[in-house]
Each structure stands twice: as structure tokens, then as C-alpha cells.
Amino acid sequence: MPAQIVRGQFGAHQFATRLGLSRWQMRVGVEHGILPEPDLDGERWSANLAEECRGRGEQVIARFGDEAPIGSARAAARLAARLGLDVERRDIEVLAAQGDLAVISTFRGHPVYLLRDLDRLDSDAVRSVVSARKGPLTDTVDAGGAATILSWPRKTFERIATERDLATDQLGRYSLADVRALGADEILVRRVAEEKRETALKRTRRSETRLEDVVRGWMLRCTAYLDRDADQPPDIASLSRAIRGLTAVRAEITRQERTPS
Picture 1 (tube, rainbow, N blue to C red):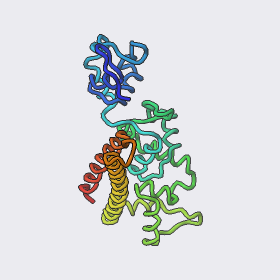
Picture 2: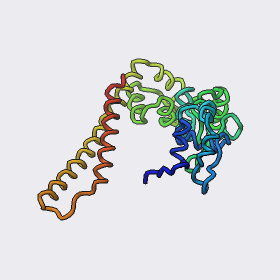
Picture 3: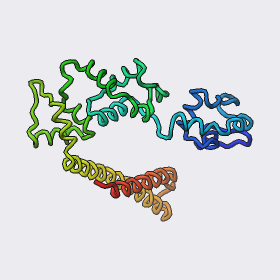
Picture 4: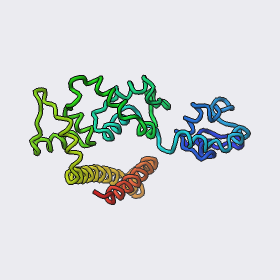
């Protein structure tokens, strides 16, 4: 249900908008004491308090940036791609526990991290944590770890590993050096990127077809009602949802089609 705007009061969405912030920025700003807690029933900010906060939006942006924080799984994937290491979620947790990475907030009870903090992490600190976890397996990776490092689907890596006759050890693990060499092959990287783009585009087009079918079905039910073949008109809310989804999907298709391979 859309938030109600009450004169002289601001709900969370209106308060964030007034300060030029997204909802996550506003929430983190409150959590870190840059912005005040709501002073009306614990849910809304008074006009006076909102006025006192003028200019604090810039402080929030300066401290936390414009990119929303991410959880441990995505943080591990980001570091894996940057450093060529099979970083895992537990490595992120160790880095946070030992003070190398700040937990900026939580989302559904799970810690989240700023992208810029991840990108500034000392590579040696990350390698040390990964090496401590892997021990004598440090210089090898399994197929899942290799796919994470390369940001490829696992099936894609396994297919290319077979094509390239990539050697494995007695545990079925790949040399980390061989995996990094695949990532350095520009022609191969472009080929995989194009495969990923085409796969994503096919998936999005299937979503478009499903939503189009929903809209067509609604129109048929509407026609049936107009022709008195149905006693009740179709639910307008289902049409609104389908139209919003179709608009978003078609925008995504346009973006994917324009993305260079």
C-alpha cells in the first residue's frame, strides 16, 4: 500500500526523498547516527526535525557512496574476480572479524558491505585468509571456484576446460595458474561474454512472452465481460502488475541488446 503523505510529517520514503537519498542510504544514515530516528510514533519524522536535517544527505553520500551494499556471497564473487582467487563467503566473514572489512549494515539479518570497501581491501590480506582456509590446496581450485574466479557459469567453465584439455590433479582440481590463463585469453573472454549475453537475453525474452500472455488473457476476460459471457470483470490489479513487469522486461531487453559483447 503506498505511503500516505501527511502535512508536516514525513514517512521513510518522503524523508529520504527530501534529503536526496535512496531508502538504503537513509536507513544506514540513521543506523550510523548521521540522521535522527523518527520522532513521531517511532515511524515518522516531524517537519521541524526534517528541516534540521537539511544538508545531512550530502554527509551520508560522502560517507557511504551511491552504490548499495552487498552481502557476503556477492562480496566473495567480487573479490574472486578482482584477485583471481576462489574467495568464499566465510573468507568475507573472517576479513570482517579480524577488522579488515567493515560491516556497514545488515539486510534481513545478514551483514552487508560497501563496494568501495571491498575494492580497497588489501590483496595480501585477502590472500592470507584464503590461504589459511585452503592450506596445501592454495594453488588449486575446483570447478566451482574456477567459475567464480572467471565470473562464468560453472557449466561453461567445465565445457571449456574439456575443450582446452585442462589438467587436473588426483583430487580433480585445476591449477590456479591455468584458470587465470583462461581469464587472460581476451578472445575466449569475449566469446564467453557473448554466450552469457545471449543466454540472458533468451531468458528475458521468455519472461516477456509470459507477461504478454498474462496481458492477452486479461484482455480476453475483459472482452468476455463486455460481451456478457462472464459475470465479473477481470482483476485490474493483475493487469497493472503485468504491465509494470512487461515495461521493466522490455527495458532490460533493450539494455541487453545494446550491451557490447
